Amino acid sequence: MNFADLHHLLDTAPAEAEVRFLLPDGGLIPAHAHVTEVGRVDKRFIDCGGTMRQDAHCLLQTWVADDEDHRIQAGKLAAILGKGRALVADESLPVQVEYEEERVTQFPLTGHSAEDGVVYLHLGLRHTDCLAKEVCLPGSACCV
Image (tube, rainbow, N blue to C red; front, side):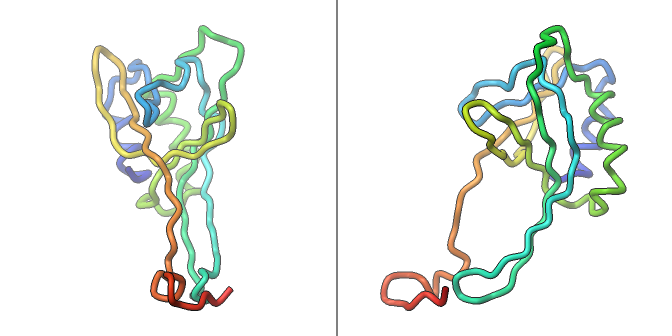
């Protein structure tokens, strides 16, 4: 899901709807999590075949505090995204959600659903990949 789609979803949901993050294993980030940052992450790199590449995404950082009565609502999260709109600059950027349980992990936002006044934001898994398979697969010499 990209930034524009997420912002539109939250703008059109009832402002008081609770927002929950659904983890890939079916669990949920605790209901009292805060969204503490809206950021743009730009990455420039050289793949193992020597090709210069770049990637960018919007990153929402979640943080679980001790205030267990806190709940993030669609209207509040839409307002937070609105404040980050200028920084993100490109609303077609995909959104990732950062969450710390045993370790800090980033999850791509893959979809959403709604049920009983709750907007569920579905999180997927990130995977590594070789971007120069023609160079690095067995039988090829890797450049780096």
